[in-house]
Length: 193
Image (cartoon, rainbow, N blue to C red; front, side):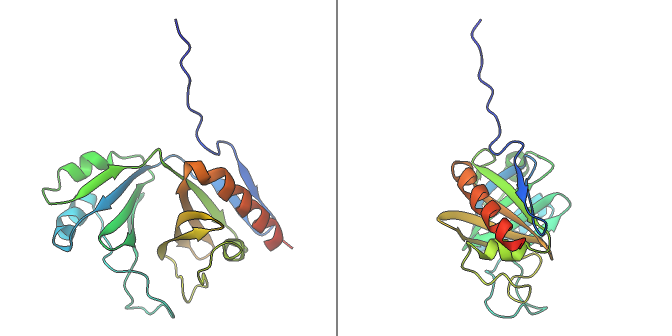
């Protein structure tokens, strides 16, 4: 009988950070890259059980009536990452493709669960750690809790999601995950001083 190779998750068992920042690999999650026209949003939101955000993050101060760039319900999040484009993440591992197949409206959904890896950056130095490699203003006034953006960290494309005042979820392709984690770890050490 032939030996079967078992794929080890990217960054399995990796931890990092400093006294001010904690880096952890997020548990495995289901992810779907979703594309849809505006007239499909209501049906897709209903199928997913959350409101799909429909506008980009505005620059400048985060006002109470500013458009939201993420929608959350329980373990599920939908992040606006471009015109008519979302990254839907289900941390409970639900079958998002099955959920979306019953929406009954025009859309395109691609399962990207194995393409992405998420790194959680948390602690009082989280913002400073991410600012070391991300060109965006990540202050709470410009990037409030719930803000999401497709951006870069170092030379890697990421999707950045502020989940709490001092916590971010960094989504990156698994092929760049070692680079992103290493750069985050270096920046965390600097933020800890």
